[in-house]
Image: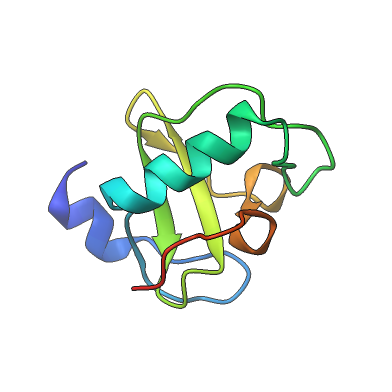
Length: 89
C-alpha cells in the first residue's frame, strides 16, 4: 500500500492511525478465521483468509484490505479481542 495514502488513513470510529498488520498478527487472525471464530462488525462470519490488513495503533481493530483497497467501515471491521493469542505490538 502506498505510504502517502497510509499516512492519511485513520480508523473511522476512533480516529487512530492505521498501520499495516504484521506477519504475526496476520497469521494469528487467519488461524482464527480457519477455525471459524472471526466475525465482522456486521455480525457476518469472516470466512476468507486475509492477504493484507490494517490495524489500529492500539491493535484492537483490524480493517481488511481487498485488492489494495482498504475497507474502512464498521461492518467490515474485525475486533482482535475475538482472536485468542493476537500478538501485542
